Length: 343
Image (cartoon, rainbow, N blue to C red; front, side, top):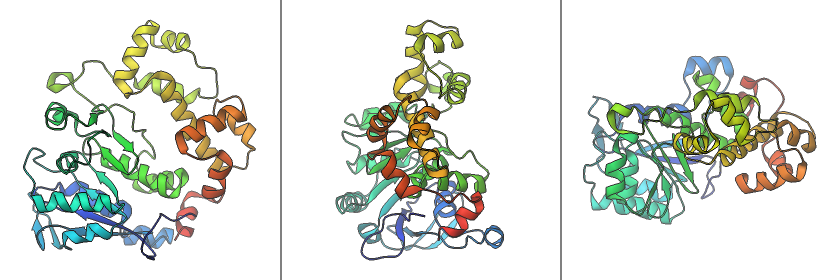
């Protein structure tokens, strides 16, 4: 099993988890649970006791009691971010609160040093104040979308998305989408099959795509179009079949023009870009977990031919199907066994 990239000759991928005075304890815990030490009772059964990641909590103060009352113990200094492989900023209770110049400079320096930058929920405001979201796609909690656009006009906000992957910078929306983004990062580092297994141990959905709309209520501050959950589920069940606008519009009982508009509002993507992304994800899972020839996987994922699969796979994954399989091919044993042998 492939391990996440590390730097400076270390055995583990170091995650510097930034703790600010109003950090949301839940999202700190999400990072610690998914990337950090394992729960002993589960580890005793699975044999999966170690993690390929090292999570280091850091902050401007040596100790920080959060508004929830959580005491996180002694924190490492901000300089920890400068040598980290990934820097994560949890959600914050007051996204509009000012942040110190020292903190923002440390974030900029960590990014310049090559760290992958991640924020959850309102933590995107912290990255935005450091200037790291200018010219980039990003998301945050949809309730603060107006404030975000006003404060960071150079960022391309996709408020409807659960999470956004923009190269070395990743952002997520509301509280529970922190788990979605964390599993997405596991998939990037260790393969989709590994992320699926982690989701099963967490007893959560192994994958909700970033383009799935946040659950927005029109009476608060949002678009009044309902998400196309039924249609999206139907498409995933028919990915291997020809999918046309006419067929999808008929399923949804709307015109093709209305479908195109509703689909972009619900997912942040065009109909066929979304379908292509889903088909590539299906192909990834098949490449990792089966021995089917690439031509068969192309048909099973709905691409029709190996060439069409290769073209779309390179566009979305940056590599060929064959190279991806060679890197991420999962052992065919059970899901818990894969996790146990990955360390």
